[in-house]
Image (tube, rainbow, N blue to C red):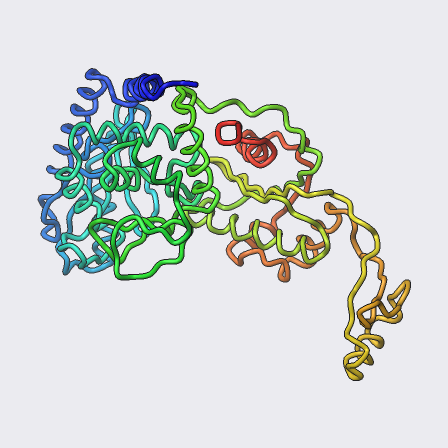
Length: 452
């Protein structure tokens, strides 16, 4: 058996390796400092003519010094007087972004409010409007960010900041890093909050590996019902766990147990390449093109569409083992379904009422007798009707549903126009799009990092 001393030595070796690759080099830190200074100077020049603006501040992981070498965006929050109208907040916030970053081909991005992004010397820079308010007096979704930065700058020691980086690397490797709808994982801020609560990476994993249903990380008088509850330390009424999917949490729990049992550098290296897919013959893909809109909107729509079609498939007798959705950076979207089988029995049994219910029996017999291949009474005294399915092939079923019966499919209204322009239902091995193929692999292959 391995001694406790050997296990500790092994853990320390792995954590030292993780720290080495997670902490940016001095050269990279200087480069980012130069970019931040340059952009702050440009912002400072732009805001002077707007009396609604009271200043600006660096935010995000760069300001808190918890950024990763490969995840080094610079976020600048432009602070508006809290009496500024919604209209001015939006329009002036965008104007400042475009004016200050005009040399760098800026473009608009959307969250709750529009913000401006540009790439400056290889680094993404975001200019984001927020209201200058006290804690708890939030007027927009971005107002907390500056307070998050102030809190973490005081709470996190230099060693804790490196522990945050190690945790982020871990999240990246198990593919659960990011709170956006596309990922539904753990944000950079959640990484900071976990380390602020537990002290370091190893203690965080020990807590998560023993997580029980109903456990709450942090303190709040309010009750929450998400799969993990993580209280925002500057807003006890806010549950950061609401954005985390059951699957992302499950990956974190299993990966934490695996790492604690056998620490390894593999948890911080590039993800293991997906092996050949054994289940590709059981996957069907609904492909379509969509009109460009914000990521949050399109991801919300395609995820709802995927779940709606899963329901329709199951109502018609198909067993959906897993479903997913995907999109690329252009206009291509897809709904993906892993089925137990693509072809099901041509006949099915419709269960009717107990013979003791006279009215219900009459109605059932009247409605089903002509379409029945066989009708009988089972051992529970219920009427049974054996009937032929309209569609036993999943491709034919989806073609009919999406091309002739779209309104009853459950597809969100926001996607109906896109679907009406054309939709293709294909077998997974016919897909050539890189982003869609990656999503297919993700549901077709066992994740060997967490199942080993």
